[in-house]
Length: 114
Image (cartoon, rainbow, N blue to C red):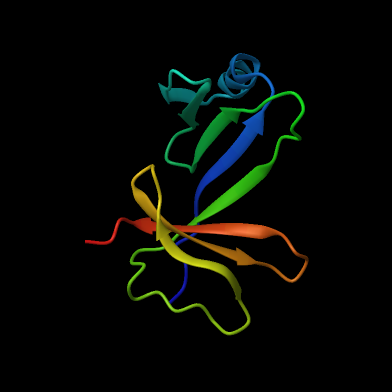
């Protein structure tokens, strides 16, 4: 079973407000914001961009999230190194982390298991 493409891009920032305005200036619309300096934007039918503010002493990271239809039936090819198996998240999905040949981590997300 393969992934279904890019679901979202997760970005960390040192300034949520400036980052949100940057993406809005590029045509993204705010879908929601939280009360802890984060939120989600989207441009048309494309993947969402979720931005979260982190402290100044932490280097902002970027994570690309790939969509998986069903965590129960997904079986990665042996060429894919699984770092963590699917686990429930606090944001209502299940998530697996894999590593590519260059050492980058990728998030695979599926709907919460029933």
